[in-house]
Each structure stands twice: as structure tokens, then as C-alpha cells.
Image (cartoon, rainbow, N blue to C red; front, top):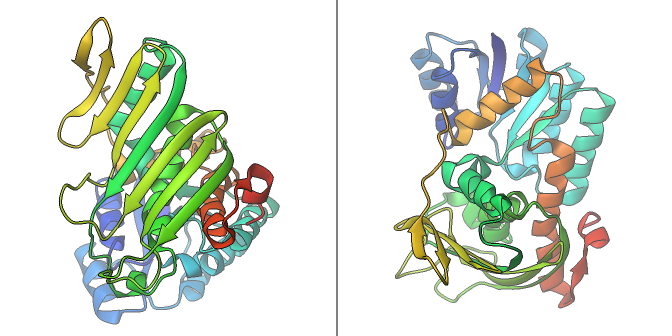
Amino acid sequence: MLRCIQVGVGGFGGRWLSAINGSSSVKHAAMVDIDGETLAKASAEFGGVPAYSDYKEAFGDVDADFALVVVPPFTHEEVAVAAFDSGLHVLTEKPMAHEMTSANRMVKKSIDADRTLMVSQNYRFRKWIRTARAYLESGELGEISHGFVSFRLNPDWGPFRQKMDDVLMIEMSIHHFDMMRYLLGRDPESIYARTWNPPWSWFRGDCAAAISIDMGGIPVLYEGSSVSFGAHTGWNGEWRIECEKGSLDFDENRGLRATTVKGGETEIPLIEMDVEDQEYSLSEFESSLGENRQPETNGPDNLKSLAMVFGAIRSKSTGEVVGFEDLLKC
């Protein structure tokens, strides 16, 4: 049984409370939150789990295996480093950090401490995208030519995100960029971005984007908005992968389907998965520790997804194409 110290139990932390509650092999050793009322409620709900307002105190007092980090991105590094210093592995919410230099330090610290660092990129742990990758790899549609990805919603992300710079990139595009890497089995070579903030926006920073990405020789056009009205896409976005013999499409309403010249449109049945999303992240993290291997979305690998975010931010600031080597330095 793995013992977890969850840092951050309010807001999205509640989703992780549910994931751990449903696990038969992970349990809470302690909970941490700066909001006393939220902390007391969560602790009581789980039978009086030890509760702390200071994560360093919790790490020092409690015997545990890993820290689950569910706090704003700009505090990820400090919590993760303290966990590594206490001999704990770390499972953190995305994005890994609020800037590349911070993420690079987290990865280096995990390596130096010989501890596992995993980022929960839960969108790639869903049936549709696992099925889509397997279908593309089967060769049914032949060689991949290019892709289109769209995201259009108008979420209420709470007050701290409304004050963020580049909120679309950091909160949502990180998911879509990571999904691109997973689905295509390619890493980015370059990125060119334009982002802006529509006049009716309730965010301080840019929340709309048009981006051209070279994914290892596969061009992908990405457009997104978190202040969009009208026809919404859902959180996964809408995807089209154009191939030699047809196209692969996904949207929330019609599901996953393939279209070929000879066969027309066919709905693709989704593969079976015992769990998805955060539950899959938790299971993958646990399995990696038990098998002494790196988890799928480990820190060093996830730097490539995060680099796409900050590469896009650099590109929109400079008006230039940002190359792969520069991406990892952003």
C-alpha cells in the first residue's frame, strides 16, 4: 500500500481525493492545505487523516512514499524539491512548472535525488486517444500527412487563473500539445504562434491562439480559445489527422471515426480500459514504482510537452519561428 501526502485538497484537489479514495493500493498518509476549513473538511471525510497547513512540516512528520502536488503551477517547484529532500517521489498536476527553468530544476533534482517525478497528463490517458494512436499505428490509413486541432470553450477557471499570463497555453494547450506528441509518436521540431486577448475577455493574459507546429515532419495547425461562445468543442478539442488513405476524426459529439475514399465513414470502437484520467495517472505512477521504471509521463519526457507551451509564448513575443533546441531552453 503506497502512502500519499496530498498537498492541495481544495478546488481540483477534490478530484484527486476521489481518485485516491477509489484506489485499493494507495491511501492518504496526510493532507496539506492553507485553507483551514477546506483542509478540516477533507480530513474528516477520510476518517481523520493527519492535516497540516505547512507541507514541509508534513514531509518531516509523516511516513509516506510520495507527495501528490495539486497547487498552482508557480509553487510546484518548491513543493517538489522539499519532497525530494525528504526522500519522497512526486506526482504533480500539470503543467510541471510555470516556466522552463523551474521545470528543468525539478527534473534535475529528481535525478540527483534518485526519485521519480511524474506529471499527470491525464488527457492522454483516455480511451479515445489510446484507440486513435493504435488505429494510426495499424496502417489502415497509410502515411500521416498533417493534422488540425481546435479547442473552443469559455470556462470559469477561478480567480488566480484569471490573473495569469498566457492562461490558454498554460492551462489547456499543455494538454493538447502533450496529446499531439502521444498521438503522432513525434516530438516538436519548431513552433510559430500568434496569441491574443479578445476585448470581451475576463482574463488578464492572452487566451486565444493560432499556432503552426512541425511535429517531427508532420505539420499541425492548432487554434484555441478559452473565451469562445457558440459551438464548443469539449475539453479534448476537435481533431482531424489527414492521411494517405483517408482521415481520422474525433469530437465529443460524434466520437472517433475514420473516413476513407472507398469505405466512407466508419465509427471506431474504443479499446477497453479499466480506468482513465487521474485514476490511470495514479495507477501508472504506482506501477512504475513497483516495477522500478520511469512512468509514461515522467519529468524528463514531459519537458518536451512543456517546451511547446513556452516555445509558443516565445514565438508570439518575438514573431519568429522557435526551433526544437530553443524550445527546451525557453
